[in-house]
Image (cartoon, rainbow, N blue to C red; front, side, top):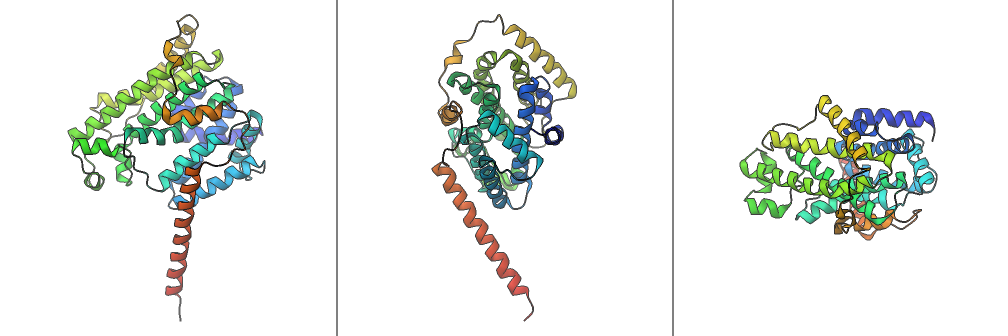
Length: 346
């Protein structure tokens, strides 16, 4: 990997993902450098979809970039070149970044989960896929540790969703499952029109945080079983993200009028705790939950990451959603052309 490309990725993560930047300092160089390239590519892709006005175009462009990466002809940008080097060096299964692509495509189509399982389906793609790719970078390919890494991804994304309920609502997004809203007597349209921290809404945020804690706990045996030099960094990611949920709890689970965060002092304390937990893992008994089966929503990631290489075809669901986005993009372009024609002088 070109050192200049890596420097670019490092700068992107320093400003775009503070939690990962803090945790990555505890990873060994052999994992940290490719992880920076991986996270930079994923972060820039997510930002293009989340913050841009042409979400369909951004997803389609990302799909084209992935095609070029797996053909060995990456786009001539630092993030793409660095990610292509990671794919080649570590034999990254294509299913993993394409799962992330599918999750971003769901975002672009205005995905609304109907059940908690569908929240996990989404979380598997936008977060657990990254956890599985991190395992690949560490040389971890067995199903048990991969399943626990995917649990950590689920936990982190549930934390993200809980933290961003208000911010998402003001942007027209809603990731709380529809059946939870229905049980609580919350009208989704009314909440999106005027998001407020009512007791019923706060109870749902609290429920998400509790579910995230369950997956954080399930992930821990997998962290304890990682290569020794990788454990501090992954323990740090686990604790720094979980601390966001703790901050939500301290403020009554209000993620509507405020954004939960962790202070620099808290991060430093958690980094120290992570080093201690890594050392203790050498003598602590291994919990039996290491051997728990993968959550159904992440099983396809575990199976893919256990294989080397990656020229597998795109899934039917990904092809379907990309087809929807292409149709939407073509319609938008056609409408734009008509508008320009109507505005032209006769």
